[in-house]
Amino acid sequence: MRCRRAAVAAVALSLLGAACGGGGKKEAASSTTQPPTPSTGPAPAVDANADPLTGLPRDPAAPVRAALIVKIDNAPKARPQAGINDADIVVEEGVEGGVTRFATLFHSKDAASVGPVRSARSTDLLFAQQLGRPLFSYSGANAVFADLVHKAPLVDVGVGRFPAIYQRQAGRPSPYNLFSDTKAMFASAPDDKTPPPPLFSYRAPGEAPPATGSEPAPRVQAVWKLNITTTVVYAWDEASQTFKRTTDGAPHLDAGGAQVAPQNVVFEVVGYHNTGLVDRSGAAVPEAELIGEGEAWVMTAGKLIKGHWSRPADAQSTTYTLPSGEPIKLTPGRTWLELVPRGNLSAL
Figure (cartoon, rainbow, N blue to C red):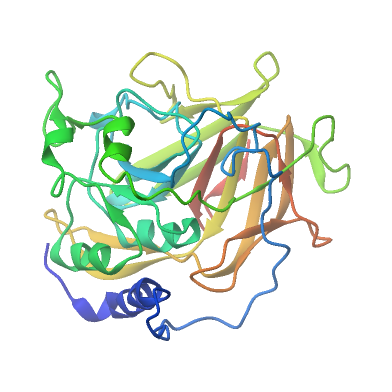
């Protein structure tokens, strides 16, 4: 990649400030240029006996550990992916040329196979600051992003540091053939055991979605479009009480043949800007704008709720609220978070 470092200098300073906090060291002030402080609701919270990333009852026998983020590709040649239906939360972000990638969060359970693992982006690091000090699995990065990873408050369990826990899978083209397993990743950082804070609020058993501001869920479409187009549609399935996902017109299946069908889908409408970097094809590398506020659509329990997202600063969690300011509560279970470019979200 050809790099113009000035475009990502603010991100680097912000991440360095986060990494320098605590441990008896003086906290470095962030120089990231911020919009006016947005309004925000209460921080996400879950029951003390629930898993923080799903809201489901926590297994007392489950290990106490940090969250794990695994970068997984979503280019057409990368499908079907392994592990995406085992993750607590999957974040879909735009990368070069209209392709998307997943930041796949594991905490409550493991995946025996996960991948194809791909490279890091600055959007991952901005998102990860909400998770404390998570483990981060990736397959490398250009010099600028690699430097950001090293400065970020993360535990690096990437292939560059632990090559023995990654394998090339036969029958897949490179670079879409790098796989690992989450138990091996967690075992590579045994001392990092602080659970992540919750990212969403959840309804109590028997609690219904709000009557005001919600409607029966239509099919909802999100699009990332540059050199190519990635089109994602979610539709409510009453029988399974989930939202079934299609990608580019076909059911999105994992490597085991199961369709992606989470209990919740959160669409966070964001801006994307050019980082000043380009890939080998000359396509600009984008970064999602995760600090600020904007429109949010939430699909949960067969309903579509239109509201608002807000994240005032890097180290704070994003909140999702109704027009009244009350938090939007999800169904306990798995959630896909879609970082949708402005103007590319629609109900069908």
